[in-house]
Length: 121
Image (spheres, rainbow, N blue to C red):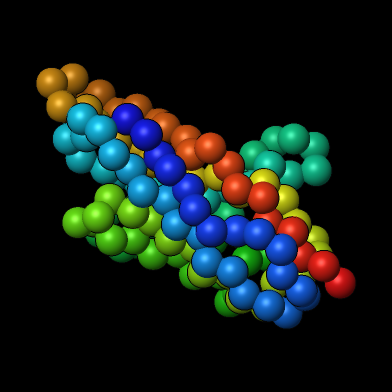
């Protein structure tokens, strides 16, 4: 199983970026997908998540600025980031909680490779 991220980069404050994360491999089903960022204390902190049914959850500081969505057919989760602030600068990671073909109902969590987002003031 692989989660491959794309997007990110450098943007001025107030600008927008879109991150994508595509899952591939021997996947039976994908439950929750989401985005985290590294954080100053190196503890990954929640950005946003979305369930297979479309229920979303956001960190308070991202509400109203970030939008998480997914395309179940493409096994892809997106993060649209608007009104970016310098404090949003970080490495962003996607993850997916999924079950594997032939591995029963057990759920595994996989992570993407990380994408740098830099917001200049």
